[in-house]
Image (cartoon, rainbow, N blue to C red; front, side, top):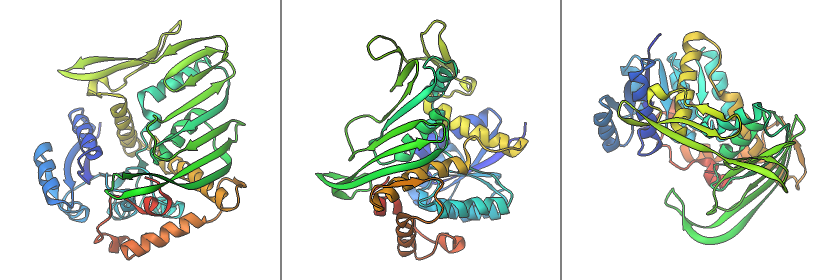
Length: 396
C-alpha cells in the first residue's frame, strides 16, 4: 500500500481539529503521512503544530514550496477553495476541500477544469451521506423494507442547506430535474450570528424538487430555528422518519428506532455498529473500527479520505466528487432563481449564470480585489470566515 503525504490548510479550532485527529489515525493505519499544516493565525499554527507533532507554516504557498506533498486538505472557508485548489493543482498536488465546493457553479467549474488540466484529483468533503446512520438508511432501502421510494420531505434549519439536500438526494438516488421555489426575508428577534454580526432579519426558503425518478421532495428552510434538521423518506411499504424506521401505514405500523453500539479499540471509544432490530436485523458495521473511527461523523471523514486514497493510488474517482457537490448547490441556486422569476419551475441542469451567482461573484471581486480565476493574486488575500454566500444569499 502506498502511503500518501498529506497536509492540512487551516488549523481552526473545530472541524480542522477533527480532521487532523482523523488524519493522525489514518497515518497510524499506514494510508497517509500527516506531514504539515498551514494556518495564517500564528498562535493557532503554533498550537496545532505542537499538538499534532508536525511542521506548521504561515500559509499554504510556503507549505507547498517547502514540503513534498501528495495531497492537501483545505479546511479554510469556501471562498478560499478556488485558490487552494488552483495552487495545489499547478504543483501536481491532489486536493480535498471542505463544503460547499464554491459559492457559484461558475467558480466550481473553473476548479474542475483546473484539476483536469493538471491531471490531479479533487474531492469535496460532504460527509452527510456517509454518516453511519445515512449508510444504514441506504441498507434499509436496499433491503426493500420501505418498498419503492415514493416521496421525500426535507426540513433544514441552519442555512447550510446543501447538507440537507445531500442527505435527501443520496437516499432518493436520482438527479433533480426541476425546482419550484419561494423565498422571503422576515424580521426575527435579534441574534448574534456565528460570524459575530448581530442580525434582526433572516430568510425563509421553500421548494418543491422533482427528481428524474418521479420522486418529489418538499424542502423547507425556515429562519434559523431551534428544531433539529431532518429528512424523511416515504416508501410504498413504510417510511424512514428522522432516525426511525416504520414499516406499515400511518394507521398501523411497526417502529424500529436506530440503535447505536460502541466498543473499545486500543483503549479508545469506537463506533461498533448502528442497526434496526427488524427480523432479521439490518446492521451497518463500522468498516473503520480497526482505525478507531469514534462516531458516525468520523466514519464519514475516513470514508472520504480513504476514497481519495484509492482514487489516487488505484485510479477511478473519489467517493463523492465535484459533480455531486455541484448538484447540491445547483438545487439551492434554482430555488432562489425560481423565486426571482416569480415562482415558476426552473429546469435542471441550469444552463446559464443565475442572478444570485452574478451578485456573489461581484461581491467576491469587491471583497477580495480579484476575480476567482486570479489564483496567484488570491494567495495574498485574507479570506473571511463568512463568505460571499453568507453576505449575499444568507447561506452559511
